[in-house]
Length: 446
Image (cartoon, rainbow, N blue to C red):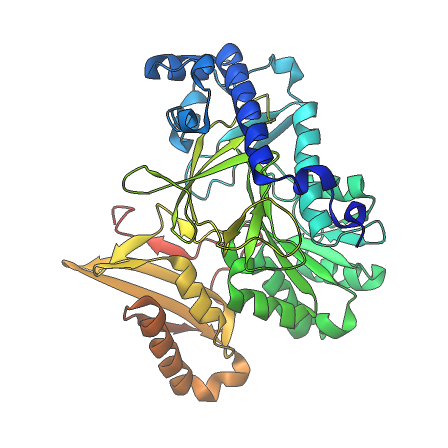
């Protein structure tokens, strides 16, 4: 295929790695200088650490620049100028977009953007969608509530930038969205993995519609949860919709930094033209460069100017992939997407547990519903882990056999025993945006 047809930006997406790193160092120094000169928060942070922008001459120097955490961003918001605080690098009158984080990990962080920032958001998303096969011929349905959470806002604008036809379904309920998708024969849509599965379930059970046969969806872009990079969940979604499913990872305070391409190599490309991703050992702080060694992500967005993202400690646990992608992009891959969060990966009964491992097991048992919940608690001095599940109505007579399989797979994949609770189908919480399925009551002080 002609490179101009395969890549959104053929030049940047195929640069040799050594050239990419030269570009990244140049852009890092530029955004560091911008933040130091225009943000009181960053100026004070770097002065306290004894760091000046001119001190950063090599990649080795970057790791000495102080990190920023979400808790720091929340504290900043208590200062002037209201409501963003002293990390703001532009006059308030230049802010044209307000968004905030979803609040799933605490008090939301407010994110101001200029019009230039918003153009950058759409550009970052254009890399994602083009790599996943979106073209001018697509009619794309956007089934999320357009509100203060960024969700798929930038995905909407990237569709327009590519030339797709966009159908916004924000105010419609799930049933109305499905009917509109059938009416217009939309070819693609974007949602969290949880909601994609929920839509398919609603289509079949309430409307008598089989998404794989009665709709025209060819591709689905997922974000907000790790599900689309978990093989069992991806397989379940693709079977339900008869479409290809692609993952994407981003965050309100960071931007749209990674994407799965049509080769689906078992990992996601980091957009290394627009972001610097570092992987840091959770315990030692050492920067990890070798493949297949997990650590937490520290990320810099090179081109975001209103409220810069410089060495942001995301808490997302990722690992570099061993092999390059056959698609020809030289942007490196992270294997398996986000494995979990550093503050979610925890020890239970002395065993290190990642919530994604539980999802892989649950979604791999076809008799189970899409929704589940995990609760970790203490009974005296002993950890207890409870898994709440729903069994499909058509598998009710097989409950004993299903639970036996589930117990075996959980023990095999996580090395833990679980208290299993079967709940009536449809009774566990349903989510349209980010699902909060893993609850560690020990951390919450219960």
